[in-house]
Length: 348
Image (cartoon, rainbow, N blue to C red; front, side, top):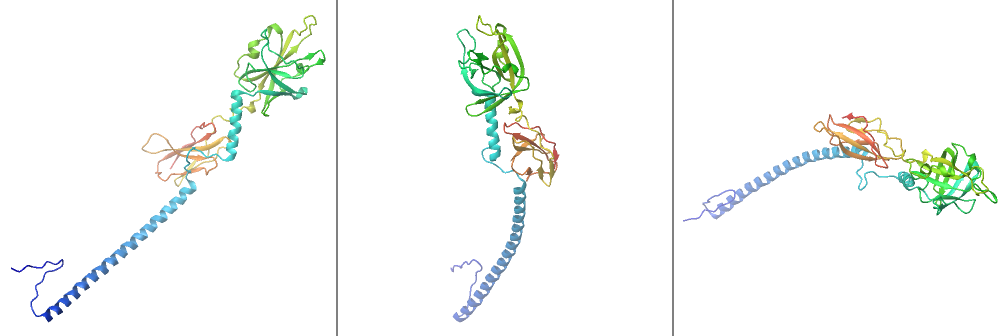
């Protein structure tokens, strides 16, 4: 039994001489080769057409992406690592100043110098405590003053107290003319580092020594007071003392209080939405460090924080995923991380 040869493309049985077999084999081989070459050419041509078409589409897509990226770079908030907002050196300096002022508000300063310009007084301050009889100690020197260091420090919330002599055997002392001071005049206290606090005179009162209002002079207060004490009245030569006490009540000048500057900032104004970009005007406040953008879609009842923009950056946000009907508002944030009320809402 003969066995049939299997070929991938055909099966054939050839009868005849060797010469005829060779010619027929060559002819068939040529036909097969021509068919293979034609098929490859057609396939290559189709592939080139597909590649050209795909290349054109890719070019269009790349161009579209480049345009979108350039638009986003020009308007989209920069994503910062670490802190939410980036502070320029000017804001860092302002932050350090306010932190120092807030520290003074919390802790006060240790006074080393006191000045009363209207009375031409400029002298030193030393810490003093209590005498054995429970009275406030005063310096032995008559040309310096004493700060009661068991109470609060000047600048701190409460009543700080500084006392000085009115006279001595040699004549007038540092506070001899203190009785002449008037409301509205200033008293300046400085620490050894040069930190200066200015207090404004509110009232002056005289009390019999045994009837002085200790609680009012030394007790707690919700204000930042400095009370100046000296002796007054007609000197009692028999007892070698003055019968009355003069108290000058002063309060820290308000513009030195940083709490006012760090209140909740104003909301941004002139907020608009155009071509997928939300923009707004900067808040004119040197404590504002940045802005937050909030968004609400038609399918969500809540506004969600979607971007943070530092104060020195472009005041705008490009929403790549925004859809018609989306709503936005913007808030400002200050150095104390206090956030303003929402701005007006705008719709895409």
